Amino acid sequence: MSQMNAPLLTAIDVGTTKICALIAEMTSETDFEIIGVGIEAARGMRKGVVVNVDGAGAAIRESVAKAERTSGLEIGQAMVSMAGSHIASVNSHGVVGISGQRGIDQEDIDRALDAAQAIAIPHNREVIHVIPRGFTVDGQEGVRSPLGMHGFRLEVEAHIV
Image (cartoon, rainbow, N blue to C red):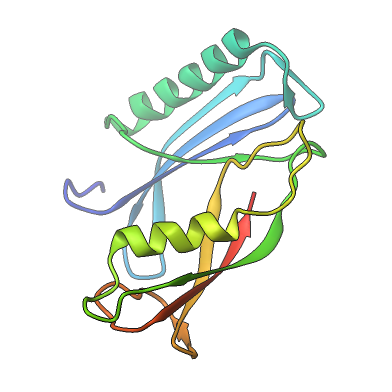
């Protein structure tokens, strides 16, 4: 039974043959209940690569609309999964200096993530996502969120897609 205030998770899997959209609500800290599903034949895809943006976009919209209809909810955001040989990822490290007179803010974190992206990327590739894996503040490793911490050196381990 759907609860109006339960946290929702929406996932979209974009494949070569089909597009699947799934809406689930969190029923406990570790469990989800699927409340909406939409499956649509893929269009505009070849070997995991979008070859026709209009066709792929229409198939994605239709799969999401089906999931929304079955759940009775309208989604605002989703996690999207795409796979293929055209997608690559690498781990990287970024370091920036911090003024010790104030706490670390989002701008400092963004600068560290930008530094992690300063890697050689072939001209036919682009960065589509940067995932911070962990931070280090003045040698203190294992920091999940450095916001508000004080230090002179901020480092980030990031996964670049």
